[in-house]
Length: 427
Image (cartoon, rainbow, N blue to C red; front, side, top):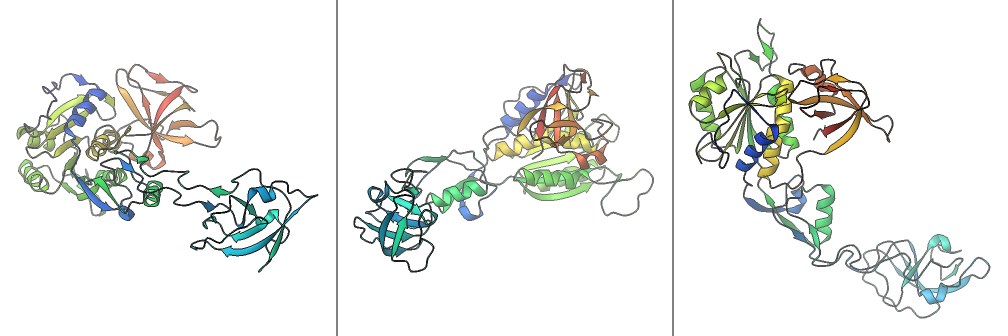
């Protein structure tokens, strides 16, 4: 793979023209080959992505069991029970959950049973305690059934009624969350094959950055991009292996990139990708042939850099303004991190919601606006910009209120109140 040119990406687009957002994403995704897989303990696999389909190794449930605390009976014995003609049954055994007992059950008999306990072979229905007169009495030897179950098999959870052995449980590419882990454990799995976790290094560039919280000298600013992007990386189930900043020194930056390429799958740099005289990322990585620089038809976040090292690490150059960096991450880096994991489905969940207020959108560029979701009316959510400045690339304070991103197509110059807009939910 030629450094600076993702495999299959074709010629670099001249910086004098704008690259479509979709074209930029496609170039990145062609370079983001899925990482190798590994077998891990299922109980610690939450947040990982399945590398292969998972099929059920056992039936779920694994045996017929009671869905209620009550009495296991023969339906034929109780089918005619009613308040005016109750049915009396002799209680011959007690089966708690976890018991291996399978007591005989003759006509006219019942077995006291707890939720989850195995149904006796000769029983076919469960009568809940509350449908009997003496059900809650301790040590009861005879019960009176006051009303019949609604049908044969009532309150019996049948073997394999949820999942049968060999059924497809989850497709490869599925993210394992709490519910998926529970399903796989119940279906007989202890380990699972997952994609390796992407390792991400994040570097903020610029002599003006202050990272230690000290007082700011004229021209200095607090460094906020790195911690923000680190949290976004973790939200994409990646591991942050480096988080730091570096000044405007080409040689120092190149040395750092070489060192990080031995420890990271993805290296993300913010700042220094524009056309300024001191844009260190562009001068250092561009000069070394490690990164292509382009202008993407989006706002904020037009200047972007992307490349692939000779050993396959993905290199991202994002704008330094915080809102631009955040929007660029969602457009460029998050989809790549999910692709490295083999994640199926889109990179973001989206909705179409009404705009609560209007705002301008730049002509001929797709706009990404940090927005606040108003969920006061559960049936009619609305969105409004998190800042009066709408999508200004420097308005980092407004991100504190943002729940999502409104995505406005390039052919719309103004969003009007009441208009439906696509909303990209925050991870």
